[in-house]
Image (cartoon, rainbow, N blue to C red; front, top):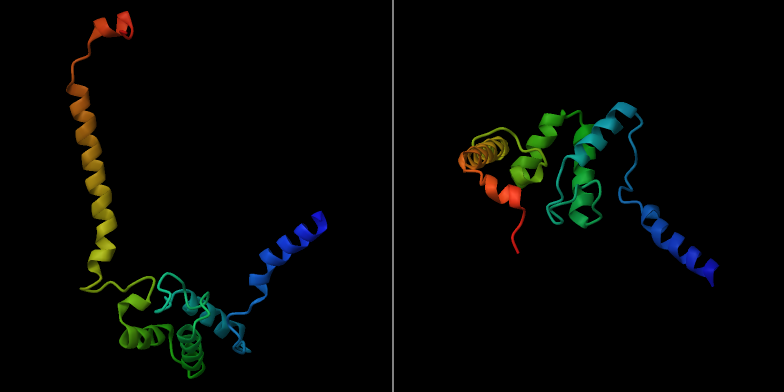
Length: 144
């Protein structure tokens, strides 16, 4: 009984690793293959939305991988590949959107939120430092 459970557990955990998502032919040149892997890791699946096309097995992700492979084979640069994808699907397709007018807020917002949080914390600390301390309550201990 225990052996069956262990076998079932092993098959359950290892089965997803056996399913190949990118079944396309690898580039002969390791530099091109590395570029391809980098690009597909930075492109969002337009169907799944929170998964890269590298990790997605839906039809459109496979189509995008084939298209990126074709563009790299034609000698296009990474910027040209990203331009093609943004033109076709918009800035949403990139995990790291470009620094442009529409996406400027995405790049500035984290710094603004950290600054606002720092200001809020300093105001709370300053206010708490001005509150009087009741020495009698500390010496007597908690009242019941």
